[in-house]
Amino acid sequence: GVRAGYRAGMRPSRQNAARNLYARGRNADRVARTGASPQAATAAATPMAATNQANNVFTDASGNVYRRQQDGAWQQRAGGNWGGNVQAAGARNMNRDFNARQRGAQRARSAPRGGGGSVRRRR
Image (cartoon, rainbow, N blue to C red; front, top):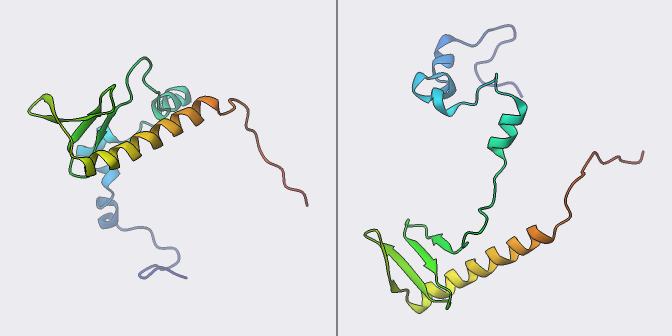
């Protein structure tokens, strides 16, 4: 395994450096700052669950947005408003996804918290 075009001791060309999308000015706001504190980087990378909010809004692969009502019926978002009940086939798929999300949330709530640490292997 040697890469095509690679020769020992050669430095990467400027052309290759220009292809680096992280070095482009228009992407500067997308690249993490190296001077940021570890705490800030961890806080930004740690997802937080919304508290006291319904976890009932879903989207499909086409970008359509749906929500599940208290009675289990599904509504679709259209024109900035919620309305219309979803047909049976679509509702079955969304109910499956909703139930999977609920099970995952329950597991997350009941999972043990804390510690980790390294795992030592016996030799």
